[in-house]
Length: 77
Image (cartoon, rainbow, N blue to C red; front, top):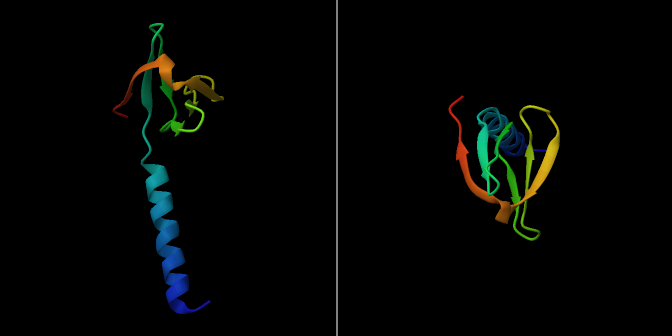
């Protein structure tokens, strides 16, 4: 690998770590009135309509159908 390739790899790695470190918790409000606090930003699968998130209380990765969500907002950490 040449020096430019290694430099690019280091910059890309640093960027990935900095973006991951800045992910904030989200509040998901559901149609049945619940509020789910996530650990980090939920991932939306546009093909299936499912939203995957890590539950801040249990630490488990869960999924919810997008049409069961009324609002998603970022929390101040």
